[in-house]
Length: 575
Picture 1 (cartoon, rainbow, N blue to C red):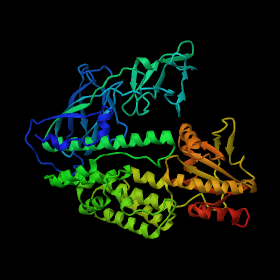
Picture 2: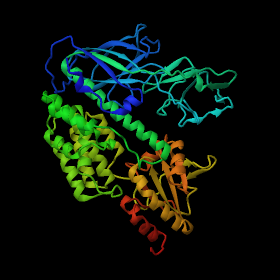
Picture 3: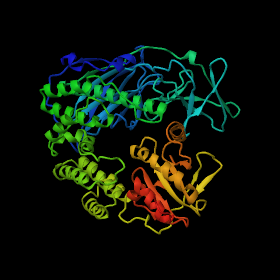
Picture 4: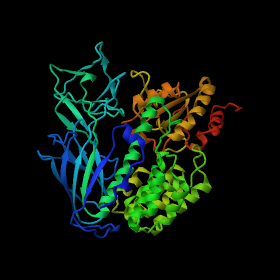
């Protein structure tokens, strides 16, 4: 039996949120070899079976179980549990898979499984009930198929009402009533149907073409409960699942806290997350772990944490871990995203710099080393994808041509890479002097107004593709406001096209930057992204008064060079 003190959680947020995790571990078989080598083409499968119970220890008629490739991915499929809560699923892809458990009115649960060889695992879980908001200033509803939530009407008695005409026979919706502002099912409205991520939709049937929903906060169940799971398997399975589950909990809590902060302040500046001594203790666990194969996995797990902005994440230690596992080691196959720690260990100094040659060569050398030495096709695919995107972003046609030749010859059977070549062609239609692609978008400020290639004729304007949490996009905002104020009366305009929804953009403009120019959201418009060959963000394009492309070099359209570029085309002497 593994010492339970090994898994003691140091983070206070979990206890404060009522999410204290409890896990019991049983062992019914002797330890077996813990292999890190991925087995391809194996016809045998790993079977996971067990029971799923609600916060009160009862089975649910709506309980579902699915499998997902990562802790964020939507499950491939969901299957219904039996009446007694029992289930059985098969894992068919070697690597780390997640079993996803869902019950209405409960937080979905994801348990990581190390599927490195054929095995049978018993996994019993009990889900925790949702924690709902204590007070409600407003309540929003999201209709299935609608791009953004809508506000409900608050009544004098503290309830909320929603009425809408519809020709649908059934109406699926979620409410933002959960403590973390996640959209979840209405506990008073049944039946329920699962969404793609482990929550549920509530379903109502309209009467006489009108849907009516009444939400009463006083009727929300206030159950304090803890989720738990019992995994029966070998020592390696037990230890890995617990360590990874603990790590995922920290990462998810950080992400949800960060998201909630952004929704309130429309910025990330000032956000702090108190992870306590988690990463300090995690390093101690790594250094005390006796199983060398599990040690490698824990080191790679540590490397995947770099995007969270944690205070106690030690980059010196991360660099030691990174260089301590050779590229040809198959452990990387379980955490291919850990390779991207390269970007953090060898960063660009300024997010507005498109291309820093010295840094870029360092980054590319590291990626090339992995590409040369790894035997994993998945790792090669991850790196080649990165290289193609970087070559396109930095305008390296020669490098892009080499990558096209390589992938076309050696990776004909990898659909993801073949699709990538079609998405990032060598030859571009976005050449200087060419006609701007046709487009039409709806004004964010007035839905009766549209902007198009034709309507924008007569002005030199900047099309700026962006999104609200893009760091380099935000870094450009001050500069965009300055040049807009300076040149707006000299025949210049800006058309900002965000891939976010209206709610996020409106919040950003209300609390952070006003963006007093033309704005639209293109959250569902993949055609315009494809036609303009948008490969990263921000993605600025300067269009002439005749509708032809004046400048597509992003380095010339950002920072101080933007004003120089505008002055040249507007024939105005810069300051």
